[in-house]
Image 1 (tube, rainbow, N blue to C red):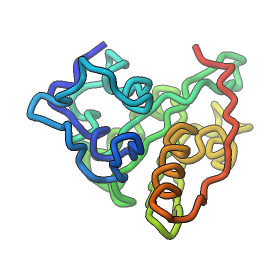
Image 2 (tube, rainbow, N blue to C red; image 1 turned 60 degrees about the vertical axis):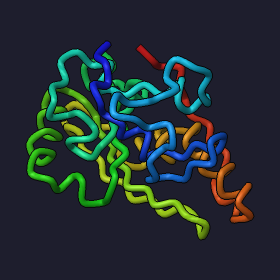
Image 3 (cartoon, helix red, strand yellow; image 1 turned 180 degrees about the vertical axis):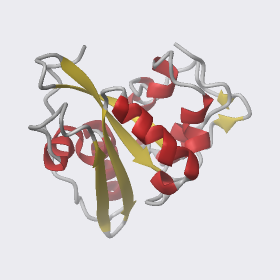
Image 4 (tube, rainbow, N blue to C red; image 1 turned 120 degrees about the horizontal axis):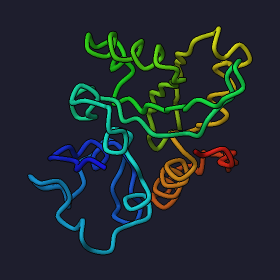
Amino acid sequence: MKACNGCTACCVLFTVPEMDKPRKTPCKHQCDKGCAIHDQSRPAICTEFHCCWCVEPSWGEELRPDRNNIIFMYRGRVPTIYGNKSPVYLGCMFSPYSRLRRENQRLIPRLVNSGKAILLASTNVDEEGLDEDYVSFFNKRLFPHLSTAALVKRSISCSEQVARANNEYYANKGGLAFLQEVSLNNNDHA
């Protein structure tokens, strides 16, 4: 597993209710080396999150979240036409335009051509509610049964934990409890 090497994208993008940290706001524990309290007790959303860039040994610097503005997370596997299962990655974008960056115009097809199914989510969360847009990329010949709706169902709200954190944060701030409980099928992890 690779070290974060100064990337702090997840420390900015995600909501952390235990630390009173809203989405897309730098964490107060963020420092030059990453997280100042990384070796201490931290909220579950911090300790249980696994960035694909750190986990996937073949992913180069071009897929590093603070450079391409997309944090990829593993979301299980889906069957291909050949009977084997291939990974699904959810990419949480910093903005709806992240996928249009020149680097990502090359990277996303490369991941799809290597047999991955990609769902990109642009999520805006505030006191008024949740606004999500999804774009999927996958090889229709390899996954003839797959649809954007099926990938969204699998990966709703950038993971169940992130959705709950957003809901808890805004509910505690007197806002609306706007996210539904989501049941993800995690039985097909590799």
